[in-house]
Amino acid sequence: MLYIIKRLIMVIPIMIGVVIIVFTLTYFAPGDPVSVALGEGYTQEEYDAQAEFMGLDKTYIEQLASYLMHLITKLDLGKSYFSNIPIESELMSRFPVSAMLGLFGIVLTVLIGIPLGIFSAIKQYTVLDYGLTALALVMAAIPGFVLAILCIVLFGVRLRWLPIMGLETPRHWILPIATSAFPGIAAMMRMTRTTMLEVIRQDYITTARSKGLKENAIIVKHALKNCLIPLVTIIGGSMAMVLAGSIISENIFSIRGIGTYMYGGISSRDYPVVMAGVLVMAFVVCVVNLLVDILYAFVDPRIKTIYGIRKNKRKKPAVMPGAESEVV
Image (cartoon, rainbow, N blue to C red; front, side):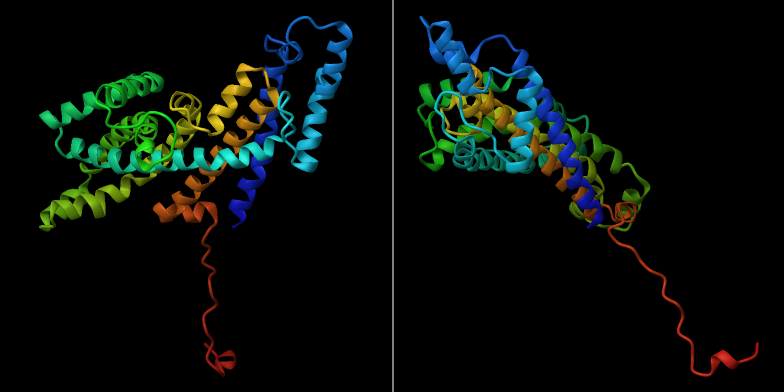
């Protein structure tokens, strides 16, 4: 419990660092939100009034300090420059969609990537191994937006099997989830194959086979159990990849999530929206990394002693009545 509290406290400086970095990048980025809001043909008085209304008439330090003060004391992410709608309400309505897409993408990554990686390892140097390895390389090499467009053209336009816009029915979820999970599947396949090849060559696997255990039991109960630590790490990294790719996939498939909200903020120079979206994604990544570290302790009991999760206190031996006066 103490380790979890320490990790949660460490999230605070990380989030503050994210705020400073993103705020600095948006502040010095080319483009003027005031000019975008006013359009063409404005006067200097109108420009100054709009800048004061948006809070952009202050210096860099004053704007950063004001944003941090509102964020820390009130958990206030501000309002959109153009719609004047509180960003929290938009994020609350959009976050469940992005979270469900990310969760389903991770589940698909695990259900496909790990079994294919195991098959590739136990069938090393066979046609199946070469085929799966080539497939993983192709999946990792294709950019996410290219894969999404190809799937739209093939399954949505040519074959007309699947819808390509929105999330009205379960069939609408297939293409967004599949395209967002493909890069993670490739990474999961390669990591599973590599770690499995190292484990199945260990002496205890040879001993288990000499005892007559079935190959399925050896792979699942002995080999796979010792491969879980790197695989759990890949799962945590895949979550970050899915969140980062949501900006592209949600815009391609016209999904009302955090990705489309951030893209609209980037296009219109609506910097509070960009800041809020990055903060939410950074917080989710921090929480996922914390869960991964906690899972380490359950996967490998040796890590429990390092983290201090389980401490065995030595008990004093029981003393029989009258033993204190016994002379040795």
